[in-house]
Amino acid sequence: MSQDQTINEGHAWFTLSGDVNSDMVRRVFDAVADMTEDRINTAHILIQSNGGYVSDGICLYNYLSKLPIKLVTYNAGAVASIAVILYLSGSERYASDTARFMVHKSHASAPHGARPDALRIIVEGLQADDARTEQILRQHVQLSEEHWRTHEYSDLHLTAAEAQKVGMINAIEDFSPPAGHRVTNI
Image 1 (tube, helix red, strand yellow):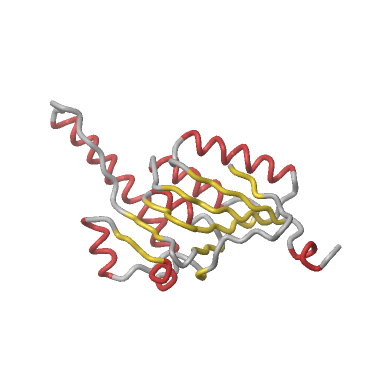
Image 2 (cartoon, helix red, strand yellow):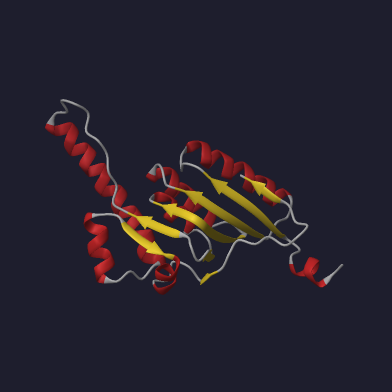
């Protein structure tokens, strides 16, 4: 066995793209079942997503961050909205130099003709989602007061260099599976 094979033993490489939703949750659950069966101890996952449903993203974060598998996440293009929370499940996180991140508060459209009690329920749900995502962000990322002010009222965009400064990523590094290793799409 060559030195490269020894170093990469137990490692596997994956791509995960699309909307964060119940379908993605199922795909990730299935992939992790295969990882455990294959005795993977380090999973390298390239994530490409513009976001989706808050509860599905938080579910994936909680699930992936507690696995007995070391998770290394990568951003090679865009990780946005609730996909940032999913991305933060990695114990090591990397991004390509040209990658971007975007975080924002939750939003929803009120149904036409909604009554005040229905609007209150929508607002309370959005506030609860914001509190959950902000808790996770604050555990992993040291945003400046200026960043938090921007986040309060609009989309906060971060380049890879900015993401490194605030601790969102460990380093600027590309997803680069070793030659001869399979890359599996989740």
